[in-house]
Length: 141
Image 1 (cartoon, rainbow, N blue to C red):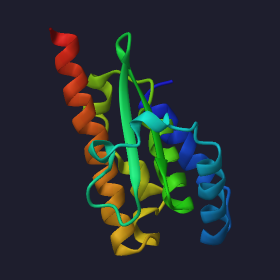
Image 2 (cartoon, rainbow, N blue to C red):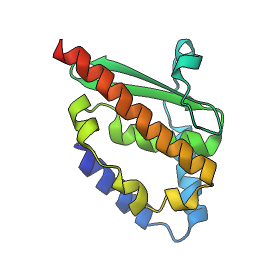
Image 3 (tube, rainbow, N blue to C red):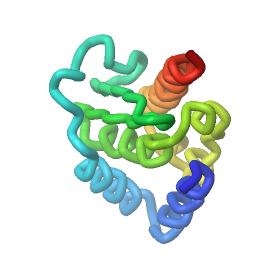
Image 4 (cartoon, helix red, strand yellow):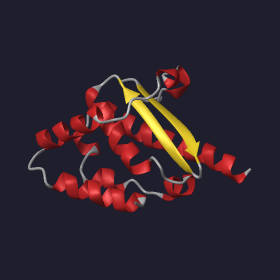
């Protein structure tokens, strides 16, 4: 699936919920299904700067796509990162760099997070794009 198709799917899923409590519960459930990051990648260099809670993000080039793994010490944050990985993992660096993140606004996520969590969300997206730039340069060589 393309990034756009995955984003549309997420928008549809979120539109089924009546209120934000249900959406938060869904995000938390997504976090519980996040594949565990290898403990070897829980390093300071993989911590996302700008997050209130600890979030580790690791990227690995598999063929011509990037596979992301992540973890967080906060359950809601873990769900947010799971949502982002669903969109961006197993995509090409080029697709990641060209993708917009309008789906975050369309599901109303940013406006329903505390300012520090919203900043963390922006930091996570930035880090995913930075990894895509780094991995794309490997493909070019």
